[in-house]
Length: 403
Image 1 (cartoon, rainbow, N blue to C red):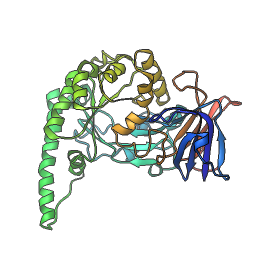
Image 2 (cartoon, rainbow, N blue to C red):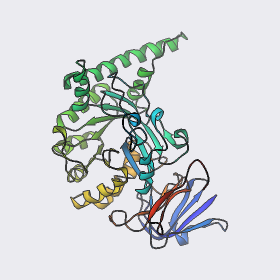
Image 3 (spheres, one colour):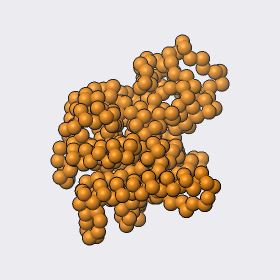
Image 4 (tube, helix red, strand yellow):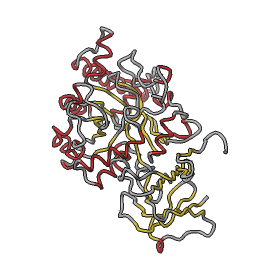
């Protein structure tokens, strides 16, 4: 099916905006983006008139727990922290995601079409993350990539969880030691595995170590939960020791060492930003911090850490960061192409460009204006959400049956 979104103010993110532009979609992919005179729209194309509206790529939430930290539920919907084993690398977020979580419908209302669902921060090594679309019948239908990264945690959370159990790790020293021990064991495992393969001998595989081997080989990045500057430096130290690709998650005090992060090319997924200073680690939480990092040359992405902050507030965080000094261009990139590039998803999402998935959102106006709303949301060319003005509410298409 061919769809042409016409007449809107098109913001591709990775190229200049186009007044009265066209986004041409075929078979779920973007095939052309440009001015009316430059795009040949087939006669049989379905025309979506976006006149007077803004047209952007769907937003990318780089660190969320939607689907495994379900809205309106207690323990029965909390599947993000398996706090019984400090090394949970074999655990996969995809196995706990419920596509019917209200948080995913909220994502669409906020223009979020892609999210990276991560295990929590109760374990030093929490497990494998999954990049999914915000709409689908099964999580397998929604899946972009798994593992998208491996989640790890430093600081207060893992030391509290295991300290209360009177077992390792109960200190920052212990948390770092658990991570080092696991990665050292993985190095030894890989040598033995490869040697067995070279001699065509059987070998007992280990799902935990196989996952960590993907990190050490550079196949997947290491998403490191850390707030305080000293914990971020520990994350950098361990990454230097083992040579994996580090992505700082949260990074509340990253602005204090922004030059060090920039020098090493370490990106920061920063947030959540609409929270109280509920613990020591986040005492320096400020909407000014993303701008400080960006001006120092650090690639940033914003996160709500949903459900800590509702996922549909992702764009509002960007707006208020602009108010506090983040430039507008970087603010939009921080919720589109930057998270896509940081987590190796930019071959699918994050911009409006030929070859990418047709995840397109039509906004009533500039999305950084808090009065604007997402009025139509397309995932892979299929309209999955629209705002009904008559009813005054958003309507999400059912993935299970036709309405």
